Length: 268
Image 1 (tube, one colour):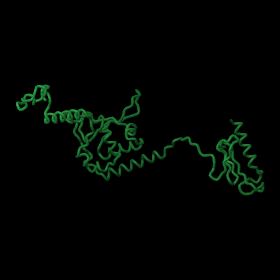
Image 2 (image 1 turned 90 degrees about the vertical axis):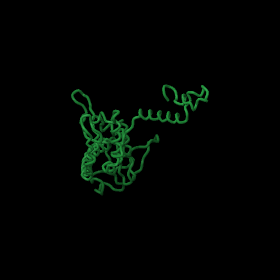
Image 3 (image 1 turned 90 degrees about the horizontal axis):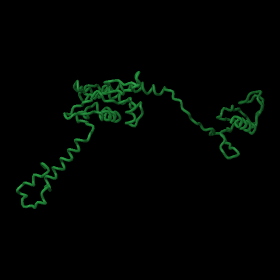
Image 4 (image 1 turned 45 degrees about the vertical axis):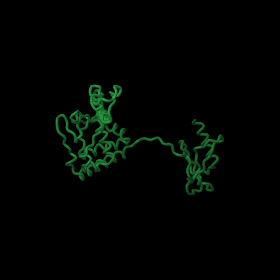
């Protein structure tokens, strides 16, 4: 189509058609018009470019699924000009917390994937981030993709010269160190443990509510609310038998339960 008209409008082969037929494309013109529309839509659509050269490298195959996912999420932030050059390489911001949220993984996993990409030569830490400076501003770490060049340099492609065994060994050492540090970290947790013992009998209040006091089969009264328990041995007196003090008297289970409930009502 040219200047709002189709070339077939002035073609003498179609001169026998009426004026109403002018402005209607032929089949070939319709195909060319649809192709031009699709190409225009494709040019405006952004995508992550993974070349055959990159995905065919042994280092790429050795990365693993999670590391490849992290690389593609980082490559999404690359911007290219009309010549195909990356204009912001070396200034790609990506923090561990942000990557963990995008991957749907833990922060430890996201950190390890960034470490793995560095050791295998796919990314380089161009500018190290921090939580905040004196002004209170936070900065994410900026990365450089070795596949592309920078405005000041050419592409290094470190993954082509990396030794896979050494990179894998270094990654395992870093992973063991990071996992061990996470394992030794003390995290306070608030848990509610079951009050009844699997070998005990669960008692109930007169209102029908479950009493958190457990009476074990061998006579041990336990309460999780700070009331001291006592070892009660039915059938044994103050004769110094096993499980009781020589001077401790024999206590009935009913009396012990009544005393514990009374203390709980006073405390509440």
